[in-house]
Image (cartoon, rainbow, N blue to C red; front, side, top):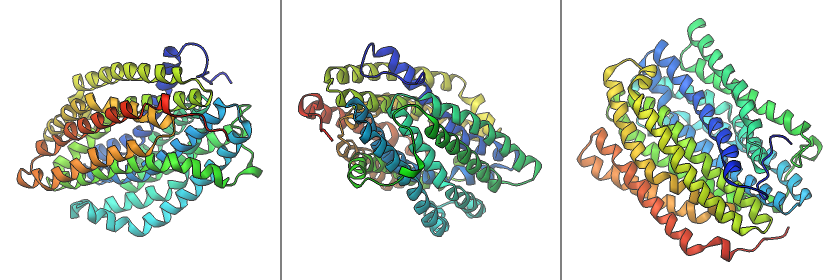
Length: 449
């Protein structure tokens, strides 16, 4: 119980920070799995191996984001049920979420193994790295059941105000991942297959730790193996919120896949630079994303408890704190950007090109933080389709049009980068206007289960 945050009573500002910081650190640690992969192969197996691993980032993000979005559906339903003090519903939602994660992971693993080579070809990965890229992707996909299980387990803990337990699990598995990366690549002489295997093993460890914690916890989210199964009614409620959120994440990743294809067409140096920069900029993204998820959970619980005024206060505080935290992280990364990029690769062209990407992306984040928090606010009320639609049009639509028109005429890295602030600015404005029109705190009533 000591890790829980009481969202429906008392002050909000300090509790939002207590909830969001472990969530941001957890996201950063997850990304460090990939960053460690890229850093190790970049330094000890060459930039071709580094490019092979990096070229998979958008694909991995697309697959994971779908089910991370669905896990947000679990988060909202459980949080609202906790706010309503409906323990029966909480328990059924927890057990439904576990089986959805496992079945979804198996489905993606099987499907992905058959399509791995086709995916690599669609990405336009150069021939000199395509075989390594396909090998990494296949091994990574084999670990999808435990990767998704960890994300759903994390959503369950977060729904009741506990963001520290998932963080502790990742601290253990993250250290394991780094150690195994070094062992497989340096000691055994493996390349991309070694870092992929290390990632799968570390995710297995984190999912097992959280599974054991759910079995032992004294909170309302306690897991009973005999009760694991699907409650059809709750599954529909979870999917109503989670599927649009997952589609939004997929659309974001799909747009990045299109951009990655454009980047790949510019050569190995640009691929390596973009990959290195991505693994720095994503730290700032997870700070933003943590406040979006925080807003979702705080609004979900307070909406369930019938406290709409606290929902609005949560939104305002999340926006202010997210803006301040994101600005601080972006500034620090820009100050130390070139030395940090050098961790991944010492090539000066790679470092300079990577810094160009960081500059454009962080300018775009001036719009993106509002998009993250406002989307989280709407999801807390169960409004998930509208943010997804705004993202489809504002992010995917704008980026696709840009790449197939402007980039075709002016094929340069700077041309690719300019689409980020444009697309994120349009999307943030759209979601802001929707929030002002919908006014969920005045329109929605609590649905009793």
